[in-house]
Image (cartoon, rainbow, N blue to C red):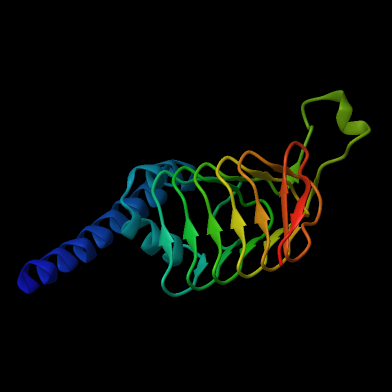
Length: 189
C-alpha cells in the first residue's frame, strides 16, 4: 500500500511537469492566450505548478480544482492565494487587476471575480470610461457557489457570501451577505 502511494505521488509529479512543459511550449510557439486555454483541461496538481511558474503566488496546503478560467492576463502575477485555501471547480478570474485571496478561504465552484469595466466598443465609453480595481478576500471567509464579485470589492475577515450573490460593495467582518445585489443577511457571532 505504501509503495503504491509513493508511485502515485511520483506519477503526479511527473505528470505535472509534463503538463508544465506542454503549457510552456504552447506559450512559446502559439502565445499566452493559447497556453492559457490549455490550463482548463489539466489536473489540479498541474494547475498549481503552472500558475506558480508563471507568476502566481500560492501559499501552502491549497486545494485548487480544475476547469479554472483566467482572463485579461499575460501571466498569473496578479493572482495571490494565501495558505490553506480552497478554490472550487470552474471559477473565473479576470486578472486585469490584482485578486488577493488571503489565508483559510473557501471559494466555491463557479465563482466569478471581475476586476474591470471597459465599454470600448460602445458609445457609452464616453460616459463610463474604462476602469479597474483589485478584489481582496480577507482571512477566514467563505464565498458561496456561483457568486460574482465585482471590481473594488473587499470581503473582510470571518464573513460569508451566500451562493448566487452579486457583491458590489464591501462585506464587513462577521457578516453574511446574499442576494442580487448582496445585502446583509445576518451578523455572525
